Image (cartoon, rainbow, N blue to C red; front, side):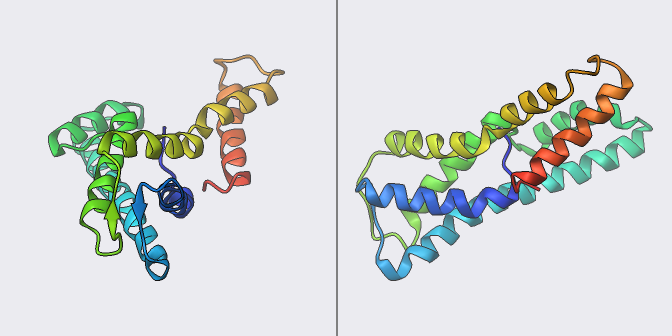
Length: 172
């Protein structure tokens, strides 16, 4: 799963609304928007940290004289050094931070549900909004049936198609 900046407000809104509707948290009506902003801030901080790791990765690639094909391996190394969690582990970390924020936020009156149950609900909301990469991959491959996978032409068209699909879904 990958966290896209454009879905952050939607996820934050849905987390607060779902938890309120299910009676897991109590938020005063006038503070709902602020509680949503609290959830957004956790996700935005994660993306900010990820961008710092990406910048460090680009610098390391340049210093070492590596080409861009080694980006993922070097990024994993940079993330480990900085204690940054990526992928599904990163999403789990963000969810944990969001639950922590619910507990300390001045905008949330009371939290009635245990952390593990909150985690399951929030993870379900994340999954709904972030599992789009697999759908996009399937749709892109279906559109490119006329090209043979593994060829340069396929790779180029695949990247173009994925970007087009992400744009059409408002992800970038």
